[in-house]
Image (tube, rainbow, N blue to C red):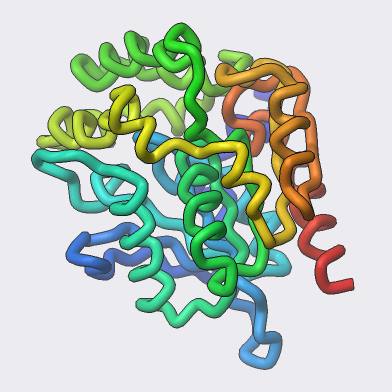
Length: 298
């Protein structure tokens, strides 16, 4: 039997031999699943990377990145309100202000001083908004296929039907189809990732929570929360924007344009990938992130 490739290594195999804490503190009234890893020696005073997943996502979206980044940085990864294994939302809407308030409460809870924000999709959307308003609270941005722009309905709705099917009927096949929208090569979708997402979608109350999460797809709500070119152009922090050649929200030139809008922006294109560049080519992603962060302190 051959050894599985990087895409099929499990979350547990990545962290099992490393000191870590997986805990559920109450943050902003939300029982929040948080992974802390990479503390290092007490005399190291490591900088922190806060890792933020995408819509309906969870910590495991960074399965293939945490170990590499934790070798040099303290990692704090968490599930948003209504997401993963954090407290679900019974009604209403989840908008960027809600995610931002929870993020700032998390920073205060752990006493995090100017962490780097590593946000994928929704995580990048949140990062762009909070960093524009409060650049003094953060050190840099790592934006992995960031979301939040107003885009054509056909692009915005590309994932809608498979997402609806997967949440309403979280079978193995439906969940894999949902993941195949964000991961270009279906062979790179691990059994563990399907199993975790299936378990999350099967949580009692998740369907209602997904309605609150999905509010950002509603045109009126999305418009008032949207990321604009001005949000990119006003960024004061160093930023690495990672895009792909099969990104559902825009072609590579779109990503390059967004990176060039930022005064201190850098661009990385990951090929043969869709919406999860950090998963689809982790070696390229991890190396680029480490060089970017090391370059800031050189």
